[in-house]
Length: 445
Ligand code: ATP
Ligand code: MG
Image (cartoon, rainbow, N blue to C red; front, side):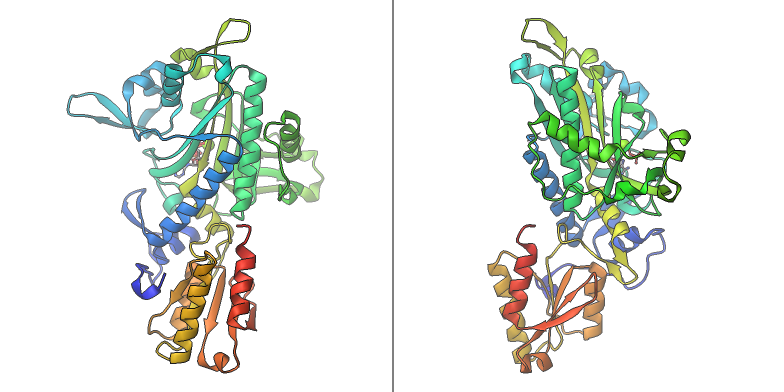
């Protein structure tokens, strides 16, 4: 993409309404525009990151054997009357009437609807296990929408639902989700710690929230600092192997890590003092095992191997897709702007032409742009007739992890400059070497 032809409405001034850094940078970098309290348009740069995040979520869900579908945003109230949640959900639910006076709602989550789909089509243990998920817009009429996409009213969520014949296999589905989530967040450059949590209105027994540590987080968390060192890395996990999956979960949930709702002072005080941490965190996901809560209420049953009919065992599992943009920025920025991890960056690399209109510089930039494209890498080429300082400021603000700087002086020696946004370290090399280096960095991403 060439900046001269793009739609990148960056702001010079700090927007007064933004209280936290991620909100400020998302507005300044021209990623989002507020349309009403907690409701945003996704401008092109923001949409690219949102799409990257969705792609990673999809890949990791599919790797775990979970199956995508798509349910609507609007739901009939009657489904929610079956579970009893139409009345329980309270003012967070946006209730709507259609022209026939039928009561509808904008879905805040989808347990009822997925249970309805299940009961219409599945009735045998032979069709299990089954996990269905979608990535869809949700609406919750939050009392205090704030911090940009972090606590929106309309927000994008991945929500998945497992159906299993018995509790043991439903708990395997829970564990499978935990591992797939760990991998998902790591690919986004995040450390998200699974913490024992409270189940709230969804209800149930087992639940973990995934928290990204950040001073602006809304949750108070208590943990053993050793938990922040754990990494899944590239290890291959066989999602069908119950023991292997359970062992990974054990590794990540044995050290103390809890939200304030489940915090236990005595257990916490048993941690060696230097590792005892109290901090704040951003909830980027949550997994639940809730057994037969919805299947019993809504009559979703399966016939087991011995011929008995039982309510299906379920759980639900969510990732805050749009909130993740804010969380990633809170975790990765400096005073000049965002620093995108390679996994989610809107463009893999930026090209800055220091002297637009200089024949050699223009030709070198075009050459780089095309050579990168040939390797499947879409660069953001700043081809505007602007001062170098302004171009650098824009690149730093929008946070592409790599920048190639091209100018007549370097080209006279056959070199361009490759700069890391994170470290600020620059290296001179030939344009071919710069392309090869970028391709190498992104080859497994
Ligand atoms: P919170 O406690 O932050 O209100 P929640 O526990 O009610 O969230 P869940 O039902 O667990 O939310 O939804 C799954 C995920 O969706 C959350 O982990 C969070 O990342 C995201 N999410 C929830 N509410 C919002 C919101 N208002 N704006 C953006 N993302 C949200
Ligand atoms: Mg939650």
